[in-house]
Length: 212
Image (cartoon, rainbow, N blue to C red; front, side, top):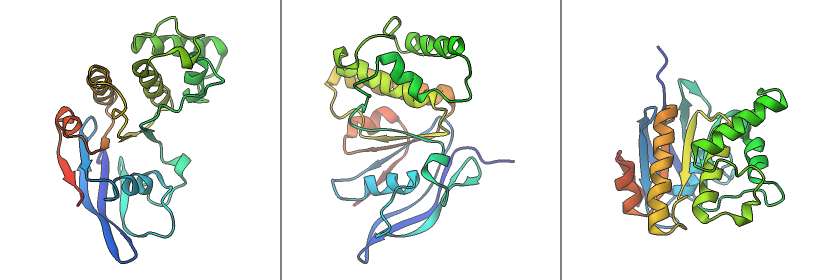
C-alpha cells in the first residue's frame, strides 16, 4: 500500500562543512510538522530543498518522498508542492479572479467551468463577488486568503508555509492560520510550517522540530 504524506528520509544539508539541517520525519495527510529556529538556522534552506530550488553550493544527502513517490530529483514544477510566503505575491496587473485563474489547473477546460470554479473558490474564502476587484484594494487578510486559494487551485499534493502569518496583525493572523490549517485538513495535505513564532507552532498542534 502507498504511504500517503510527506517523508523526509535522512535529509542532511551542509554548507562549508557545517550541518544546517538533519531531519527524518513523516507528515501524514492533514498533519502539520513545524520547523523552528532562529534566522540563519536552515529553515528556508530545508524548504528550498523540498521545492527543488536549493543552491548547488550546499551538500545534501537524503530523500524527499511524497505519497510514496521519490521527488528528490524531479524538476520543481513536477513536484506538485504548494508554498505560501510572508508576502502574498499577487499579480498587481490582474484582478482577484484573474489571480485565481492563474492558479487553476490547465486541465479545467471551458470558460464557463473555469468561472464557476473561481466563483466557488471566492465564496469558500468569504470573498464572493470580488472577481473584478483590484488586489491593491484588499486588506492584508483578504490578500492572504486569495494567495492561499490560488495555491490550492493548482492542485498541490503538499503545503509548505514559509512564515506566511508573520506580517498580519494578531486578529487576522489567528483567522488566516485557522483557515490554512482547516483547508489542509479538508484536502488531506501534509503541511510543513517554518516559523520562529511559538504561537504558530501551538496553533498547528503537531510535532515541532527545532533547528539550532
